[in-house]
Length: 342
Image 1 (cartoon, one colour):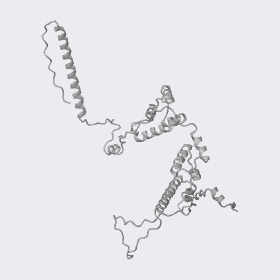
Image 2 (cartoon, rainbow, N blue to C red):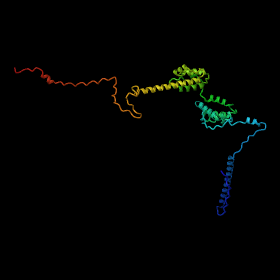
Image 3 (cartoon, one colour):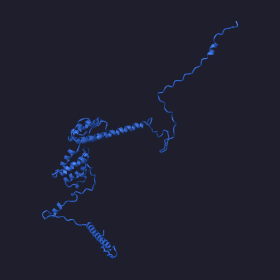
Image 4 (tube, rainbow, N blue to C red):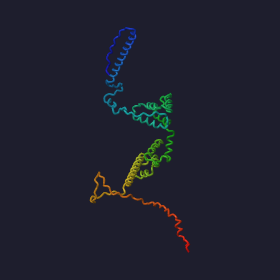
């Protein structure tokens, strides 16, 4: 933007006629508006000039704290040591209403945002207030109102205190006890599910229950695992240690993948055999049998009659003959007739 040129005041109209007073008023207002527009243009031009002109940055230091000589190079922070500002724009958490079923998803969304953009939150109080800004409905709204109206400042001493309070108020009630009871029963066993479905649920239950002892987790994992997969991992030469449950997860995953691939192979073999009546034999080079060139369909052979089933149903019974009608007169003719001529 270039600076605005000086405005030339319009010539004052000559007062004449009944509307001369109105004309004078309009002329004064127009001149005032032009003056204001010219001033705004000049201000914008100065702002643009300040923005486009680079200025050197000088650091203010006191004489006591200013390092000299080699000390200055040692204390000066390098570019690699300074934390770069994140340019990521992760999705913000959804509006939270205080429903316990959605509490874990909201908490995880906030944690992901903090890890991707740590420079956006200089203090832990900034994190807490940022989370409370999404408490806008129902129970969450009332809770945020209670925290902000409290005379205690700050209401939470740290983010850890806020997280503990959040788990108590907005995560599923008695979640840890429910997970522990399920792990002590047979409800989490693999059964007819895939290995990946079983592993996902088992990881969630371990996380919710708070179990950390390796051998205990491994024993529960083996108890619910498919018996064939469990036996192959336990009998393998590189069976993992009981305390390393993560290695048990990986070993069971390998066995499950190999088992699934083997089943797919057998299914393919059976389906391929069903398409051929016998094994395919390649003719020998000197057998005298002409080979069909690639890309040419073989000549059609004589089509054999379809195979008859082994069991032949019996033929339907023949219809009975209607017979010969009885001839009464013919029977009578055979009887003895007396000779009346005697």
